[in-house]
Length: 313
Image 1: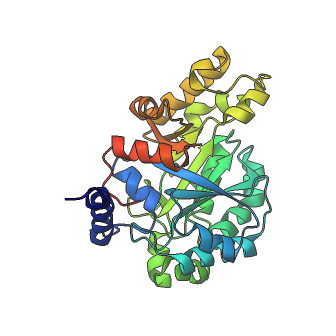
Image 2: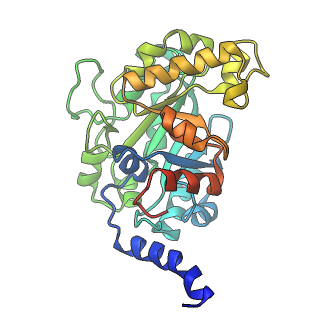
């Protein structure tokens, strides 16, 4: 066997795994988390459209964070981005598109704010996006309204949640993106793990001192799948703008905030989002990080090998 043949074997094995793998869900990120696997993301700015979607259809990442908190709040561009992902797909794992999670300028600061702006949450999901990461998640009542905005009126009731706010007629466009019938979309358009068959992945940024004070309450709201502690904004809120960076050099108050959010995630079985680096990827996974930011393809590959991931990437 010559050197070229030896080098080609891993590639051939990877190609074989990709050909054999059959997706179990629409949302690749949920499929991985449900299997106990960490996930890795990359970003796209609000305003990215069809061509950018085509380019990112085969991203190295498990999901795309589509940034509209500080980027353009443009639902038409987001829908075109989703259409581009479909046109450029499927992914190496056989999923129709990568998962797309959006951040919004609508914040979890109060129930009144969320009740006035829940339509933004709905318009985002109706582009075919797979979930939302809610920024500044301070008020548990606001979080409950956020979850309700992501559920149909006739979804299975939960005693801790308001009635769903999604109405009939909203299922046609996102169903086309997901590649399912309108009726099937309506069944699957519900937050996971609240609904084990749901395909929406909802997260929280517990990223300021007000949210931190309510960490345990907001993390316990049914329908939430993951959370992070947002070190950039947390540092500003704690008047420690330079208090973040590598995990081992965090300011003591920042380290305390991180530990509190991590503990709340573990207590409520939420995936914890945190930065990982080449020198700490395995340590972070062992600690309980399940959503990895700042990784890049090489660090993500190291993490995937460490956890013996079976899904192709």
